[in-house]
Structures are given as C-alpha cells and as structure tokens.
Length: 132
Image (cartoon, rainbow, N blue to C red):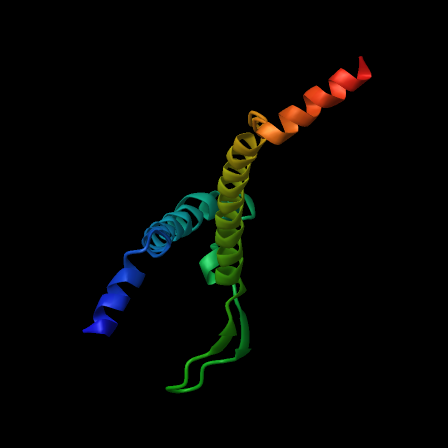
C-alpha cells in the first residue's frame, strides 16, 4: 500500500495537477487553432492564390498502379501544420511574456529594508558619538 500512497501524493502535488490541466487545455487549443487555420484562414489565402486548396497540394513521386495507391509528398498539409505551429507558438510566447512581466513587477516592488540588529544600532550610535 506504500506505493499507492506515494503515487497519490505525487499525483496530487500542485505542479502535476497544473501540468495536467495545461496539457488538456493545450490539446483543446491546438484543435481550435487547427480548425481555424484549415477552415477559416487557408481558404481565403487559397482563393487569393487562384483557387488553391492547400489540403490537395502535393507532389506525386510514383503514380498509382492497379491496387497500389500513388506515393505523394503532401506539402499543402505540411504548410497548414506549420501555420498551426506558428500561431500556437506565438500564443504561448505571449502568455509567457505576460507571466514574466507580472513576475518582474512583483520582484521590482521594493521591500522594506530589514531593521538593523541591536548590535548594529549600538555600533552606529558609538560611531556617531565619536564623530561628534
């Protein structure tokens, strides 16, 4: 039973739970971005380029023969994936930049200097007396 309790304490730590939530939200965000790129962004770009459907852009390496399908390099799908990645990377960059900015503001808040110890105060008084 020791292993189960150890696993439970590991799984319930704040970092692991936060990471799990981030992964789930990130997966959903990735699907939203993929749909945005494939269904909203690329069709107008393809229309501007002369009615090109990026999903269908490919280079045929070997033609189909009989029951064997054609061998193709689907660079249109790759372009869509690259656009997905750029959008997701930029969104993550903006979130991290905002978090770092907030963290920096917390660090910049001037902390009150610690009160000197009794010995330091006594030595300061002695120094001041000797100067007079």
